[in-house]
Image 1 (cartoon, helix red, strand yellow):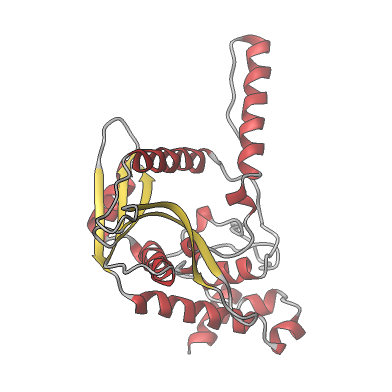
Image 2 (spheres, one colour):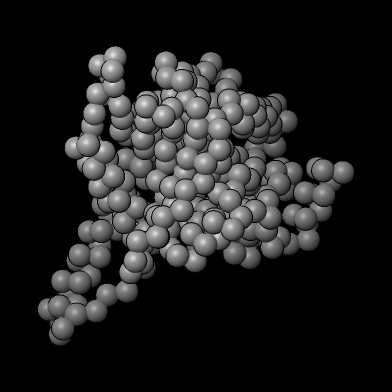
Length: 273
């Protein structure tokens, strides 16, 4: 997966070892091993990807390049340290910032999905829920023109609900996009916190879970024909999906993405007709 080179045979061997270490460490990081669905995933526009996730379906590939995630994790750690060192007290004595604190969006009964995660930053002084996104400049410009998209917007409001459940009074959600190349570029998307956005997303997740745990689903043994009834989305980010398998004609082995074979398109159309 990694492209490695070295100055002579010794350098090549050393480069390969370091690459293997990076890949292994990333694959075994707590974030990578997380099985339960998190706030960052609930708003994914692709129902099929969410169904795979809820069923803990075997991934179609395990060769995703980890470097972007590693760099993003490092940036989150840097921001955590920065706000921790700039901590201040409010007039009532409470700390102004809640930094990388775990919140529970919903601690639900068995029939629904538990949703919890680590909130990047909550500013009690302004009632703002912050989330950091380290992106390339082209991606930053895309978010600047079109907004954050349904997945990131949903994530922001889910963390808002998590903070509300923790006894806070969130007023706004904000996603801070920071460009990662050559020069500092920052774009902030923000809107008033809306609990209903989070509740609608949880209701959608419950609907998907109900479909995959129904008696019809169990009796089908989750075969290819059953999976054709679970739609994808034109907004799906297929190349980042662990279940993406280009050209796949067997959905139990992987999803071909939005460019689907005819039998899968038929299944989707029959579902929405």
